[in-house]
Amino acid sequence: MSNTKDFIVEQLKKQIIDFKSEIKEQTVGKVIEVGDGIARISGLSDCMMSEMLEFTTGKQTNDRETLSASSQSPERDCDGKSGNRRSPLRETATRQAVYGVALNLEEDSVGAIILGDCHKIKEGDEVKSLKRILEVPVGENVIGRVVNPLGQPLDGKGEMLADKFYPIEKIAPGVITRESVSQPAQTGIKAIDAMIPIGRGQRELIIGDRQIGKTAIAIDAIINQKGQNMKCIYVAIGQKESKIANIAAKLEEHGAMEYTTIVLAGASDPASLAYIAPYAGCAMAEYFLDKGEDVLIVYDDLSKHAVAYREISLLLRRPPGREAYPGDVFYLHSRLLERSCKLNEQHGGGSITALPIIETQAGDVSAYIPTNVISITDGQIYLEPDLFYQGNRPAVNAGLSVSRVGSAAQIKAMKKVAGKMRLEAAQYRELAAFAQFGSDLDEDTKNKLERGKRLVEIFKQDQYKTVPAANQVLIFFAAISGLLDNVPVEKINKFEEELNKYAENNGQDILQEIAEKGDFDEKLEEKMKKLVEDCKGTIEIIK
Image 1 (cartoon, rainbow, N blue to C red):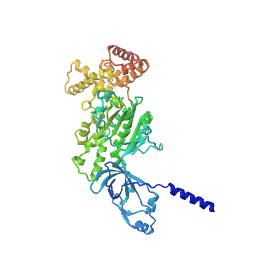
Image 2: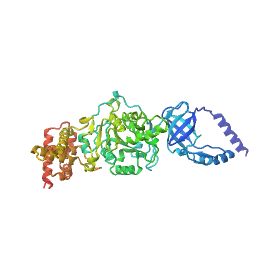
Image 3: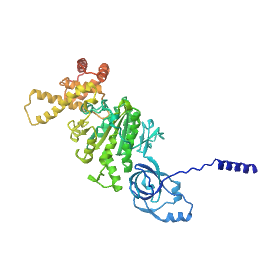
Image 4: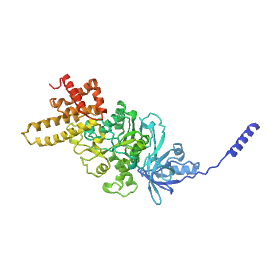
Protein backbone atom coordinates (compact mmCIF):
# COMPACT_ATOMS: atom_id res chain seq x y z
CA MET A 1 0.00 0.00 0.00
CA SER A 2 2.79 2.43 0.95
CA ASN A 3 4.55 1.58 -2.35
CA THR A 4 1.44 2.67 -4.27
CA LYS A 5 1.24 5.93 -2.29
CA ASP A 6 4.93 6.67 -2.91
CA PHE A 7 4.45 5.98 -6.61
CA ILE A 8 1.48 8.38 -6.84
CA VAL A 9 3.41 11.08 -4.90
CA GLU A 10 6.41 10.68 -7.20
CA GLN A 11 4.20 10.96 -10.27
CA LEU A 12 2.52 14.11 -8.90
CA LYS A 13 5.91 15.69 -8.09
CA LYS A 14 7.13 14.88 -11.59
CA GLN A 15 4.06 16.46 -13.19
CA ILE A 16 4.45 19.58 -11.02
CA ILE A 17 8.13 19.91 -12.01
CA ASP A 18 7.35 19.37 -15.73
CA PHE A 19 4.33 21.70 -15.69
CA LYS A 20 4.67 24.73 -17.94
CA SER A 21 1.99 27.36 -17.98
CA GLU A 22 1.19 28.91 -21.35
CA ILE A 23 -0.73 32.10 -21.89
CA LYS A 24 -3.16 31.73 -24.79
CA GLU A 25 -4.93 34.77 -26.09
CA GLN A 26 -8.35 34.25 -27.65
CA THR A 27 -11.03 36.68 -28.69
CA VAL A 28 -14.47 35.52 -27.59
CA GLY A 29 -17.77 37.24 -28.32
CA LYS A 30 -21.45 36.49 -27.80
CA VAL A 31 -24.36 36.10 -30.17
CA ILE A 32 -26.79 38.99 -29.70
CA GLU A 33 -29.12 38.12 -32.56
CA VAL A 34 -29.54 35.17 -34.90
CA GLY A 35 -31.97 34.48 -37.72
CA ASP A 36 -32.22 33.33 -41.36
CA GLY A 37 -28.60 32.19 -41.51
CA ILE A 38 -27.24 35.50 -40.18
CA ALA A 39 -25.79 36.24 -36.72
CA ARG A 40 -24.92 39.53 -35.08
CA ILE A 41 -22.09 39.23 -32.55
CA SER A 42 -20.71 41.54 -29.88
CA GLY A 43 -17.24 41.46 -28.32
CA LEU A 44 -15.13 40.68 -31.42
CA SER A 45 -13.29 44.00 -31.52
CA ASP A 46 -10.32 42.80 -33.60
CA CYS A 47 -12.22 40.60 -36.06
CA MET A 48 -11.03 40.59 -39.70
CA MET A 49 -13.13 40.68 -42.87
CA SER A 50 -13.91 37.12 -44.08
CA GLU A 51 -12.44 35.69 -40.86
CA MET A 52 -13.66 32.27 -39.78
CA LEU A 53 -15.72 32.21 -36.59
CA GLU A 54 -16.57 29.23 -34.41
CA PHE A 55 -19.97 29.16 -32.73
CA THR A 56 -19.88 26.94 -29.65
CA THR A 57 -23.44 25.77 -29.15
CA GLY A 58 -24.67 24.87 -25.63
CA LYS A 59 -23.16 25.53 -22.17
CA GLN A 60 -21.96 23.10 -19.54
CA THR A 61 -23.11 23.63 -15.94
CA ASN A 62 -23.80 21.65 -12.79
CA ASP A 63 -26.13 24.15 -11.12
CA ARG A 64 -29.41 22.27 -10.70
CA GLU A 65 -31.42 25.40 -10.05
CA THR A 66 -30.09 27.01 -13.21
CA LEU A 67 -30.84 23.82 -15.10
CA SER A 68 -34.41 23.62 -13.90
CA ALA A 69 -35.00 27.34 -14.51
CA SER A 70 -33.54 27.28 -17.99
CA SER A 71 -35.45 24.17 -18.99
CA GLN A 72 -38.71 25.95 -18.16
CA SER A 73 -37.99 29.35 -19.74
CA PRO A 74 -39.10 29.96 -23.32
CA GLU A 75 -36.46 31.04 -25.83
CA ARG A 76 -36.70 32.10 -29.45
CA ASP A 77 -34.91 30.09 -32.08
CA CYS A 78 -33.40 31.50 -35.28
CA ASP A 79 -36.76 31.52 -37.06
CA GLY A 80 -38.23 33.77 -34.38
CA LYS A 81 -40.53 31.05 -33.01
CA SER A 82 -40.68 30.57 -29.28
CA GLY A 83 -40.39 27.19 -27.64
CA ASN A 84 -38.97 25.39 -24.61
CA ARG A 85 -35.20 25.29 -24.59
CA ARG A 86 -33.56 21.94 -24.16
CA SER A 87 -31.69 21.15 -20.97
CA PRO A 88 -28.09 22.43 -21.18
CA LEU A 89 -26.86 18.97 -20.09
CA ARG A 90 -28.62 17.46 -23.09
CA GLU A 91 -27.15 20.25 -25.27
CA THR A 92 -23.68 19.47 -23.92
CA ALA A 93 -24.13 15.81 -24.83
CA THR A 94 -24.96 16.73 -28.45
CA ARG A 95 -22.65 19.74 -28.53
CA GLN A 96 -20.80 20.58 -31.76
CA ALA A 97 -19.24 23.63 -33.38
CA VAL A 98 -20.84 25.52 -36.24
CA TYR A 99 -18.70 27.82 -38.39
CA GLY A 100 -19.40 31.25 -39.79
CA VAL A 101 -17.71 34.04 -41.73
CA ALA A 102 -17.52 37.69 -40.69
CA LEU A 103 -18.84 39.97 -43.44
CA ASN A 104 -20.06 43.16 -41.75
CA LEU A 105 -17.57 44.90 -39.42
CA GLU A 106 -19.62 47.55 -37.64
CA GLU A 107 -18.77 49.87 -34.76
CA ASP A 108 -20.45 47.87 -32.00
CA SER A 109 -21.07 44.46 -33.59
CA VAL A 110 -20.02 42.00 -36.29
CA GLY A 111 -22.45 40.61 -38.88
CA ALA A 112 -21.63 37.03 -39.88
CA ILE A 113 -23.09 34.42 -42.20
CA ILE A 114 -23.55 30.94 -40.74
CA LEU A 115 -22.07 28.07 -42.77
CA GLY A 116 -24.43 25.38 -41.61
CA ASP A 117 -27.62 24.89 -39.61
CA CYS A 118 -28.54 28.15 -37.87
CA HIS A 119 -31.07 26.29 -35.69
CA LYS A 120 -28.17 25.03 -33.53
CA ILE A 121 -27.21 28.59 -32.54
CA LYS A 122 -29.01 30.50 -29.78
CA GLU A 123 -28.75 34.01 -28.43
CA GLY A 124 -25.94 34.20 -25.87
CA ASP A 125 -23.82 31.41 -27.40
CA GLU A 126 -20.07 31.98 -27.40
CA VAL A 127 -18.25 32.85 -30.64
CA LYS A 128 -14.49 32.49 -31.06
CA SER A 129 -12.32 34.27 -33.63
CA LEU A 130 -10.12 31.67 -35.33
CA LYS A 131 -7.63 34.26 -36.71
CA ARG A 132 -7.86 32.61 -40.15
CA ILE A 133 -9.46 33.78 -43.37
CA LEU A 134 -11.98 31.22 -44.68
CA GLU A 135 -10.08 28.43 -46.43
CA VAL A 136 -10.89 25.09 -48.05
CA PRO A 137 -8.96 21.82 -48.45
CA VAL A 138 -7.21 21.44 -51.82
CA GLY A 139 -4.97 18.87 -53.46
CA GLU A 140 -5.00 15.64 -55.43
CA ASN A 141 -7.36 14.04 -52.91
CA VAL A 142 -10.29 16.25 -53.95
CA ILE A 143 -10.19 14.83 -57.49
CA GLY A 144 -12.96 12.31 -58.14
CA ARG A 145 -15.01 13.49 -55.16
CA VAL A 146 -18.30 15.31 -54.57
CA VAL A 147 -17.79 17.87 -51.79
CA ASN A 148 -19.65 20.80 -50.24
CA PRO A 149 -18.17 24.34 -50.39
CA LEU A 150 -16.30 23.70 -47.13
CA GLY A 151 -14.53 20.70 -48.69
CA GLN A 152 -16.49 18.12 -46.68
CA PRO A 153 -17.28 14.95 -48.70
CA LEU A 154 -20.90 14.30 -49.77
CA ASP A 155 -20.36 11.15 -51.86
CA GLY A 156 -20.12 8.57 -49.06
CA LYS A 157 -16.61 7.50 -50.15
CA GLY A 158 -15.11 8.12 -46.73
CA GLU A 159 -12.98 10.83 -45.20
CA MET A 160 -10.94 13.11 -47.45
CA LEU A 161 -7.42 14.00 -46.28
CA ALA A 162 -6.33 17.39 -47.58
CA ASP A 163 -2.82 18.10 -48.86
CA LYS A 164 -3.15 21.83 -48.17
CA PHE A 165 -5.64 24.57 -47.40
CA TYR A 166 -6.15 27.57 -49.72
CA PRO A 167 -8.09 30.76 -48.88
CA ILE A 168 -11.28 31.08 -50.90
CA GLU A 169 -10.55 34.75 -51.67
CA LYS A 170 -7.31 35.59 -53.45
CA ILE A 171 -6.02 38.46 -55.57
CA ALA A 172 -5.98 37.47 -59.26
CA PRO A 173 -2.60 37.08 -61.02
CA GLY A 174 -1.32 40.36 -62.50
CA VAL A 175 -0.82 41.21 -66.16
CA ILE A 176 2.97 40.65 -65.97
CA THR A 177 2.50 37.02 -64.91
CA ARG A 178 0.05 36.22 -67.73
CA GLU A 179 0.38 35.45 -71.41
CA SER A 180 -2.10 35.53 -74.29
CA VAL A 181 -4.44 32.59 -74.81
CA SER A 182 -3.16 30.37 -77.64
CA GLN A 183 -3.84 26.76 -76.67
CA PRO A 184 -7.25 25.25 -77.56
CA ALA A 185 -9.58 23.84 -74.91
CA GLN A 186 -11.65 21.56 -77.14
CA THR A 187 -15.26 20.99 -76.05
CA GLY A 188 -15.97 18.23 -78.56
CA ILE A 189 -19.06 20.19 -79.69
CA LYS A 190 -18.77 20.96 -83.43
CA ALA A 191 -20.68 24.26 -83.45
CA ILE A 192 -18.54 25.66 -80.59
CA ASP A 193 -15.10 24.38 -81.60
CA ALA A 194 -15.61 25.70 -85.15
CA MET A 195 -17.36 29.05 -84.64
CA ILE A 196 -16.87 30.03 -80.98
CA PRO A 197 -13.50 28.49 -80.03
CA ILE A 198 -12.42 28.39 -76.39
CA GLY A 199 -8.76 28.61 -75.36
CA ARG A 200 -7.01 27.53 -72.17
CA GLY A 201 -7.16 30.49 -69.80
CA GLN A 202 -10.29 31.99 -71.40
CA ARG A 203 -13.58 32.90 -69.67
CA GLU A 204 -16.46 31.96 -71.98
CA LEU A 205 -20.01 32.62 -70.76
CA ILE A 206 -22.81 30.14 -71.52
CA ILE A 207 -26.07 32.10 -71.51
CA GLY A 208 -29.70 31.29 -72.28
CA ASP A 209 -33.13 30.50 -70.85
CA ARG A 210 -33.75 27.57 -68.52
CA GLN A 211 -33.87 23.99 -69.79
CA ILE A 212 -32.30 24.55 -73.23
CA GLY A 213 -28.97 22.80 -72.76
CA LYS A 214 -26.57 25.15 -70.91
CA THR A 215 -25.42 22.49 -68.43
CA ALA A 216 -25.27 19.91 -71.24
CA ILE A 217 -22.60 21.96 -73.04
CA ALA A 218 -20.53 22.26 -69.85
CA ILE A 219 -20.78 18.52 -69.07
CA ASP A 220 -19.83 17.59 -72.66
CA ALA A 221 -16.82 19.91 -72.37
CA ILE A 222 -15.76 18.08 -69.18
CA ILE A 223 -16.23 14.65 -70.80
CA ASN A 224 -14.15 15.75 -73.81
CA GLN A 225 -11.13 16.54 -71.58
CA LYS A 226 -10.40 12.83 -71.15
CA GLY A 227 -6.79 12.29 -72.15
CA GLN A 228 -6.25 16.05 -72.65
CA ASN A 229 -4.25 16.49 -69.41
CA MET A 230 -6.78 18.87 -67.88
CA LYS A 231 -8.39 18.76 -64.43
CA CYS A 232 -12.07 19.74 -64.22
CA ILE A 233 -14.14 21.30 -61.42
CA TYR A 234 -17.92 21.55 -61.67
CA VAL A 235 -19.46 24.00 -59.17
CA ALA A 236 -23.21 23.47 -58.72
CA ILE A 237 -24.91 26.48 -57.10
CA GLY A 238 -28.51 26.07 -55.95
CA GLN A 239 -29.03 22.94 -58.07
CA LYS A 240 -31.23 20.01 -57.06
CA GLU A 241 -29.21 17.23 -55.45
CA SER A 242 -30.95 14.64 -57.69
CA LYS A 243 -29.75 16.49 -60.82
CA ILE A 244 -26.15 16.55 -59.55
CA ALA A 245 -26.36 12.83 -58.68
CA ASN A 246 -27.34 12.13 -62.32
CA ILE A 247 -24.48 14.33 -63.59
CA ALA A 248 -21.98 12.53 -61.31
CA ALA A 249 -23.28 9.16 -62.59
CA LYS A 250 -22.87 10.27 -66.23
CA LEU A 251 -19.34 11.55 -65.60
CA GLU A 252 -18.51 8.25 -63.87
CA GLU A 253 -19.97 6.33 -66.81
CA HIS A 254 -17.76 8.19 -69.30
CA GLY A 255 -14.65 7.91 -67.10
CA ALA A 256 -14.58 11.65 -66.44
CA MET A 257 -14.75 11.53 -62.62
CA GLU A 258 -11.11 10.40 -62.64
CA TYR A 259 -10.09 14.03 -63.25
CA THR A 260 -13.20 15.92 -61.99
CA THR A 261 -14.33 17.41 -58.67
CA ILE A 262 -17.95 18.41 -58.04
CA VAL A 263 -18.52 21.22 -55.51
CA LEU A 264 -22.18 21.18 -54.51
CA ALA A 265 -24.19 23.87 -52.75
CA GLY A 266 -27.62 22.29 -53.15
CA ALA A 267 -31.03 23.92 -53.43
CA SER A 268 -31.74 22.94 -49.81
CA ASP A 269 -28.46 24.37 -48.49
CA PRO A 270 -28.31 27.84 -46.89
CA ALA A 271 -27.55 30.90 -49.05
CA SER A 272 -24.20 31.27 -47.28
CA LEU A 273 -22.91 28.01 -48.83
CA ALA A 274 -24.19 29.04 -52.28
CA TYR A 275 -22.32 32.35 -51.84
CA ILE A 276 -18.93 30.77 -51.06
CA ALA A 277 -19.26 27.79 -53.48
CA PRO A 278 -17.69 29.33 -56.63
CA TYR A 279 -14.83 30.86 -54.62
CA ALA A 280 -14.17 27.46 -52.99
CA GLY A 281 -14.12 25.77 -56.41
CA CYS A 282 -11.73 28.44 -57.73
CA ALA A 283 -9.38 27.92 -54.74
CA MET A 284 -9.28 24.18 -55.55
CA ALA A 285 -8.44 25.05 -59.17
CA GLU A 286 -5.66 27.44 -58.09
CA TYR A 287 -3.81 24.60 -56.37
CA PHE A 288 -3.32 22.92 -59.78
CA LEU A 289 -2.65 26.30 -61.46
CA ASP A 290 0.25 26.83 -59.03
CA LYS A 291 1.63 23.42 -60.05
CA GLY A 292 1.63 24.48 -63.73
CA GLU A 293 -1.39 22.35 -64.68
CA ASP A 294 -4.49 23.22 -66.73
CA VAL A 295 -7.95 23.35 -65.14
CA LEU A 296 -11.46 23.74 -66.57
CA ILE A 297 -13.99 25.14 -64.07
CA VAL A 298 -17.75 25.42 -64.61
CA TYR A 299 -19.91 27.75 -62.47
CA ASP A 300 -23.51 26.51 -62.75
CA ASP A 301 -24.94 29.05 -62.38
CA LEU A 302 -23.95 32.60 -61.41
CA SER A 303 -27.56 33.86 -61.57
CA LYS A 304 -28.36 31.78 -58.48
CA HIS A 305 -25.07 32.93 -56.95
CA ALA A 306 -26.12 36.59 -57.32
CA VAL A 307 -29.53 35.81 -55.79
CA ALA A 308 -27.86 34.10 -52.79
CA TYR A 309 -25.58 37.12 -52.30
CA ARG A 310 -28.57 39.46 -52.53
CA GLU A 311 -30.33 37.46 -49.80
CA ILE A 312 -27.29 37.61 -47.52
CA SER A 313 -26.76 41.33 -48.16
CA LEU A 314 -30.36 42.28 -47.42
CA LEU A 315 -30.34 40.23 -44.20
CA LEU A 316 -27.14 42.01 -43.17
CA ARG A 317 -28.97 45.33 -43.72
CA ARG A 318 -26.70 46.42 -46.55
CA PRO A 319 -28.36 49.07 -48.77
CA PRO A 320 -30.15 47.61 -51.81
CA GLY A 321 -29.51 48.96 -55.31
CA ARG A 322 -30.90 48.07 -58.71
CA GLU A 323 -33.35 45.11 -58.54
CA ALA A 324 -32.50 44.99 -54.79
CA TYR A 325 -29.00 43.67 -55.57
CA PRO A 326 -26.23 45.23 -53.46
CA GLY A 327 -23.98 47.83 -55.07
CA ASP A 328 -20.99 45.46 -55.24
CA VAL A 329 -22.73 42.65 -57.16
CA PHE A 330 -20.51 43.37 -60.22
CA TYR A 331 -17.41 43.02 -58.04
CA LEU A 332 -18.87 39.75 -56.68
CA HIS A 333 -18.39 38.13 -60.09
CA SER A 334 -15.47 40.15 -61.47
CA ARG A 335 -13.12 39.21 -58.62
CA LEU A 336 -14.07 35.56 -59.17
CA LEU A 337 -13.67 35.42 -62.95
CA GLU A 338 -10.47 37.53 -62.97
CA ARG A 339 -8.76 34.59 -61.27
CA SER A 340 -9.09 32.58 -64.52
CA CYS A 341 -5.95 33.11 -66.57
CA LYS A 342 -3.12 31.64 -68.60
CA LEU A 343 0.21 32.07 -66.78
CA ASN A 344 3.50 32.49 -68.66
CA GLU A 345 6.31 29.92 -68.53
CA GLN A 346 8.24 31.83 -65.85
CA HIS A 347 5.27 31.39 -63.50
CA GLY A 348 4.57 27.73 -64.27
CA GLY A 349 2.53 27.99 -67.48
CA GLY A 350 -0.68 26.72 -65.86
CA SER A 351 -4.18 27.90 -66.74
CA ILE A 352 -7.72 28.12 -65.41
CA THR A 353 -10.43 28.12 -68.09
CA ALA A 354 -13.83 29.29 -66.78
CA LEU A 355 -17.26 28.44 -68.18
CA PRO A 356 -19.70 30.54 -66.13
CA ILE A 357 -23.40 29.92 -66.80
CA ILE A 358 -26.11 32.61 -66.65
CA GLU A 359 -29.84 31.96 -66.89
CA THR A 360 -31.89 34.58 -68.75
CA GLN A 361 -35.59 35.35 -68.44
CA ALA A 362 -37.37 35.12 -71.84
CA GLY A 363 -34.06 35.64 -73.67
CA ASP A 364 -33.35 39.01 -72.08
CA VAL A 365 -29.57 39.29 -72.41
CA SER A 366 -29.74 43.01 -71.53
CA ALA A 367 -30.87 42.37 -67.93
CA TYR A 368 -28.71 43.45 -64.98
CA ILE A 369 -26.77 40.29 -64.06
CA PRO A 370 -26.39 38.99 -67.68
CA THR A 371 -24.87 42.29 -68.89
CA ASN A 372 -22.56 42.38 -65.86
CA VAL A 373 -21.14 38.93 -66.58
CA ILE A 374 -21.02 39.49 -70.38
CA SER A 375 -18.77 42.52 -69.74
CA ILE A 376 -16.46 40.48 -67.48
CA THR A 377 -16.01 37.46 -69.77
CA ASP A 378 -14.10 36.95 -73.04
CA GLY A 379 -17.15 36.03 -75.10
CA GLN A 380 -20.45 34.22 -74.79
CA ILE A 381 -22.23 31.18 -76.18
CA TYR A 382 -25.88 32.21 -76.55
CA LEU A 383 -28.46 29.41 -76.64
CA GLU A 384 -31.74 30.33 -78.33
CA PRO A 385 -35.06 28.69 -77.33
CA ASP A 386 -36.47 28.83 -80.89
CA LEU A 387 -33.52 26.86 -82.25
CA PHE A 388 -33.84 24.36 -79.40
CA TYR A 389 -37.53 23.71 -80.07
CA GLN A 390 -36.84 23.38 -83.83
CA GLY A 391 -34.53 20.46 -83.00
CA ASN A 392 -31.20 22.27 -83.53
CA ARG A 393 -29.29 20.99 -80.52
CA PRO A 394 -27.03 22.40 -79.19
CA ALA A 395 -29.17 25.50 -79.85
CA VAL A 396 -26.21 27.84 -80.41
CA ASN A 397 -27.08 31.17 -82.02
CA ALA A 398 -23.94 31.92 -84.04
CA GLY A 399 -25.02 35.54 -84.56
CA LEU A 400 -25.19 36.52 -80.89
CA SER A 401 -22.38 34.20 -79.79
CA VAL A 402 -18.77 35.38 -79.90
CA SER A 403 -15.30 34.38 -78.77
CA ARG A 404 -12.96 37.31 -78.21
CA VAL A 405 -9.97 34.97 -78.47
CA GLY A 406 -11.11 33.61 -81.85
CA SER A 407 -8.93 31.50 -84.12
CA ALA A 408 -5.94 31.84 -81.76
CA ALA A 409 -7.59 29.01 -79.81
CA GLN A 410 -7.88 26.63 -82.79
CA ILE A 411 -5.58 24.10 -84.41
CA LYS A 412 -4.27 25.12 -87.88
CA ALA A 413 -6.58 22.78 -89.82
CA MET A 414 -9.69 23.92 -87.94
CA LYS A 415 -8.72 27.56 -88.49
CA LYS A 416 -8.60 26.98 -92.25
CA VAL A 417 -11.96 25.22 -92.62
CA ALA A 418 -13.89 27.11 -89.90
CA GLY A 419 -13.39 30.54 -91.51
CA LYS A 420 -15.09 29.50 -94.76
CA MET A 421 -17.75 27.51 -92.95
CA ARG A 422 -18.77 30.36 -90.64
CA LEU A 423 -19.16 32.61 -93.69
CA GLU A 424 -21.31 30.01 -95.48
CA ALA A 425 -23.46 29.49 -92.36
CA ALA A 426 -24.01 33.25 -92.02
CA GLN A 427 -24.90 33.55 -95.73
CA TYR A 428 -27.36 30.67 -95.39
CA ARG A 429 -29.25 32.40 -92.52
CA GLU A 430 -29.58 35.57 -94.61
CA LEU A 431 -30.60 33.73 -97.78
CA ALA A 432 -33.07 31.47 -95.93
CA ALA A 433 -34.83 34.54 -94.52
CA PHE A 434 -34.91 36.13 -97.99
CA ALA A 435 -36.01 32.93 -99.78
CA GLN A 436 -39.23 32.78 -97.72
CA PHE A 437 -40.53 35.76 -99.72
CA GLY A 438 -39.09 34.94 -103.16
CA SER A 439 -40.15 32.14 -105.50
CA ASP A 440 -37.64 32.53 -108.37
CA LEU A 441 -34.11 31.87 -107.15
CA ASP A 442 -31.01 31.63 -109.33
CA GLU A 443 -28.90 28.48 -109.38
CA ASP A 444 -26.08 29.92 -107.24
CA THR A 445 -28.53 30.94 -104.48
CA LYS A 446 -30.16 27.50 -104.55
CA ASN A 447 -26.74 25.82 -104.19
CA LYS A 448 -25.84 28.02 -101.21
CA LEU A 449 -29.18 27.22 -99.55
CA GLU A 450 -28.65 23.48 -100.07
CA ARG A 451 -25.11 23.64 -98.67
CA GLY A 452 -26.34 25.71 -95.69
CA LYS A 453 -28.98 23.09 -94.88
CA ARG A 454 -26.23 20.47 -94.73
CA LEU A 455 -24.13 22.65 -92.43
CA VAL A 456 -27.09 23.03 -90.06
CA GLU A 457 -27.44 19.23 -89.98
CA ILE A 458 -23.71 18.80 -89.30
CA PHE A 459 -23.96 21.16 -86.31
CA LYS A 460 -26.67 18.98 -84.73
CA GLN A 461 -25.13 16.77 -82.06
CA ASP A 462 -26.47 14.48 -79.33
CA GLN A 463 -25.46 15.01 -75.72
CA TYR A 464 -22.53 12.95 -74.37
CA LYS A 465 -21.33 12.28 -77.96
CA THR A 466 -18.30 14.52 -78.29
CA VAL A 467 -16.30 14.58 -81.53
CA PRO A 468 -12.47 14.81 -81.67
CA ALA A 469 -11.06 17.90 -83.41
CA ALA A 470 -9.59 15.92 -86.35
CA ASN A 471 -12.94 14.27 -87.13
CA GLN A 472 -14.64 17.68 -86.95
CA VAL A 473 -12.18 19.10 -89.48
CA LEU A 474 -12.83 16.16 -91.81
CA ILE A 475 -16.64 16.58 -91.97
CA PHE A 476 -16.36 20.40 -92.20
CA PHE A 477 -13.88 20.08 -95.06
CA ALA A 478 -16.27 17.70 -96.85
CA ALA A 479 -19.13 20.20 -96.45
CA ILE A 480 -17.33 23.35 -97.68
CA SER A 481 -15.63 21.47 -100.55
CA GLY A 482 -19.00 20.45 -101.99
CA LEU A 483 -18.38 16.73 -101.35
CA LEU A 484 -21.70 16.45 -99.48
CA ASP A 485 -23.82 18.28 -102.07
CA ASN A 486 -25.17 14.99 -103.45
CA VAL A 487 -25.85 13.49 -99.98
CA PRO A 488 -29.53 13.94 -99.00
CA VAL A 489 -29.98 16.43 -96.14
CA GLU A 490 -31.85 13.91 -93.96
CA LYS A 491 -28.94 11.44 -94.30
CA ILE A 492 -26.10 13.84 -93.43
CA ASN A 493 -25.80 12.67 -89.79
CA LYS A 494 -25.79 9.01 -90.86
CA PHE A 495 -23.10 9.77 -93.44
CA GLU A 496 -21.00 11.52 -90.78
CA GLU A 497 -21.18 8.41 -88.55
CA GLU A 498 -20.06 6.21 -91.46
CA LEU A 499 -17.25 8.65 -92.37
CA ASN A 500 -15.92 8.60 -88.78
CA LYS A 501 -15.96 4.78 -88.74
CA TYR A 502 -14.23 4.63 -92.14
CA ALA A 503 -11.59 7.17 -91.05
CA GLU A 504 -10.91 5.20 -87.85
CA ASN A 505 -10.22 2.04 -89.86
CA ASN A 506 -8.58 3.44 -93.01
CA GLY A 507 -7.41 6.96 -92.29
CA GLN A 508 -5.80 7.04 -88.83
CA ASP A 509 -2.64 8.57 -90.30
CA ILE A 510 -4.68 11.37 -91.92
CA LEU A 511 -6.54 12.12 -88.67
CA GLN A 512 -3.25 12.26 -86.81
CA GLU A 513 -1.78 14.57 -89.45
CA ILE A 514 -4.80 16.91 -89.15
CA ALA A 515 -4.44 17.08 -85.36
CA GLU A 516 -0.66 17.59 -85.32
CA LYS A 517 0.37 19.28 -88.60
CA GLY A 518 1.50 22.87 -88.22
CA ASP A 519 0.38 23.83 -91.72
CA PHE A 520 -2.77 22.81 -93.60
CA ASP A 521 -1.39 22.35 -97.14
CA GLU A 522 -2.69 21.09 -100.50
CA LYS A 523 -1.25 17.59 -99.99
CA LEU A 524 -3.30 17.11 -96.81
CA GLU A 525 -6.39 18.50 -98.59
CA GLU A 526 -5.95 15.94 -101.38
CA LYS A 527 -5.63 13.10 -98.86
CA MET A 528 -8.80 14.24 -97.04
CA LYS A 529 -10.71 14.59 -100.32
CA LYS A 530 -9.70 11.05 -101.38
CA LEU A 531 -10.69 9.67 -97.95
CA VAL A 532 -14.19 11.22 -98.17
CA GLU A 533 -14.70 10.04 -101.78
CA ASP A 534 -13.53 6.51 -100.93
CA CYS A 535 -15.96 6.46 -98.02
CA LYS A 536 -18.81 7.60 -100.29
CA GLY A 537 -17.99 4.73 -102.64
CA THR A 538 -18.30 2.11 -99.91
CA ILE A 539 -21.75 3.03 -98.54
CA GLU A 540 -25.20 3.08 -100.11
CA ILE A 541 -26.24 6.34 -98.49
CA ILE A 542 -26.54 8.58 -101.55
CA LYS A 543 -29.28 6.49 -103.18
